[in-house]
Image (cartoon, rainbow, N blue to C red; front, side):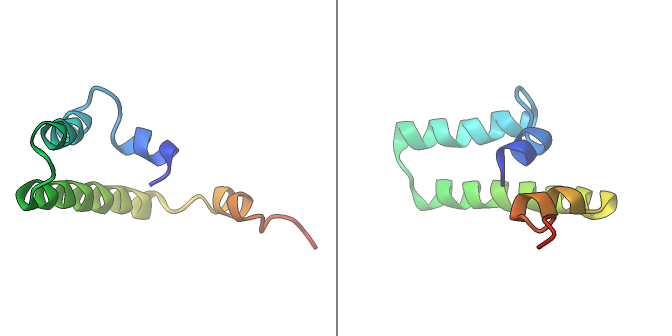
Length: 75
């Protein structure tokens, strides 16, 4: 997930961001164990699924995608 979409779907001081940071605080304190890895995977899958659902409703910004990959240049 790029930084722009990260800030859009997981804004600072939101519950999602707090949950994300809590996972990494636990990992720093206790180490990455299988339970914490599974929790991180569930969080990430849920966040990506929600972002994809919103993007599919709004539709992709094709101008942004074309610009990102350089496809807007006429050769």
